[in-house]
Image 1 (cartoon, rainbow, N blue to C red):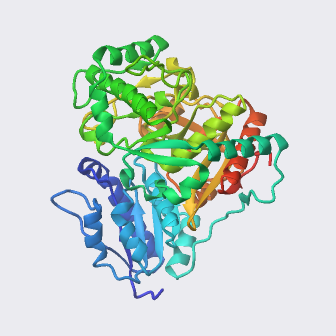
Image 2: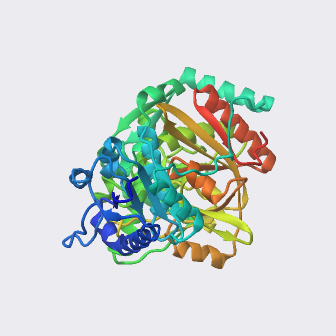
Image 3: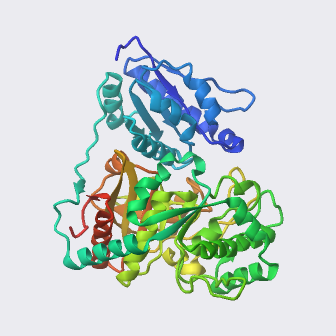
Length: 533
């Protein structure tokens, strides 16, 4: 680009004023570091919108505000989206879709606020929308990896990352059993079909998390669009005795509720009772509509009516969970999970449903969940990821199961009405990770292998304190994939995980899942090593 033409940067944020205000200081620090880096490279740069003295933050905080901002941004200007926080992609997607100049998404390497998660969501949304973009991240914006690629982008060149860890599945020789299982289960799903219950589509601006019906239908999965207002209404029909029986069951299993008396800051008994009502109501609605999987929006809509859905989500994904009966006395989904996808991420929902069926067919524990690809640091020679999500993580994944789990109040800046998480530390073991995404107008999937490691308790606590302490955590080491490779390739804020019994069964499950994906029409890639393929 012409060095006299300044690059423009924007900061996209949350919809919630409390989150934007709380996180602004971290964002401002990142912006200062980025501006200094650009100036050191000898290029001009300016901010594309002003700090709001009334709201006390400088984020784009709505689609309305985003459209106002983009009216004043030259269509061909080099444009950066700088993120140190979780952001709602639809606030800026309209402007990025129509922008004619080069686009760079940038995040700070920090666990404090989910800036990396927000950037990955925006990347996945841009990928789905077919918008060309480059992406970068940095610990402090002074490292050579970042600066060399930033300089290339400022000079009008593409940002290049190493993608040698990615192999297309086509041409890979599959184990015979994996091929047979995957193909058979795929054809069964396409013949018998399945319903995915969607409690209000499009949570938190996640355009990448919505699968268009015409892409989903060939897999045999169809959406039942449900309303969170119906879920809330069904919660009101659950009796106190029914809700209390769920809590009693959980406490008998060893789950600890960390409660207090202040509704504004503590997890209270009333909040827990409402969460137990939600769990029962969700099961009953799923049964009514014949759902094979469901997704609750979690942060939007219900947050103004009820406590958070996290507790319900984690229980739904567990085989061993409080029994729920229909009003006429039938046991619902007895002894099985009802796969739940956090934040109605439909890509994770399709993945979770397929994972459940493959793992069950292979005799493996079928519990699976999504996590945020939140953060990571080196530890004893390995790069150990922090996979961390508020809801959906099942107790079967935790060290000690229910007895190793606690429920702590959700952060008030996100959840005014509270509610408890389902918090635990994921047990060591061999896992398969995956992600379905949309690119070039079709469904695609990446799969790889990782090991979950157990860190010293003090290190786990440190990682919790620099991320979000009430949320469940998984310490994961990806096989044959570096930090930079994972960030450059991954097209979503979420990553799906499920355990094998050991490396051999995890490899078999990965291969069978890949075969099922391929038979359903997805374009599949194998990422990293130790996959058995």
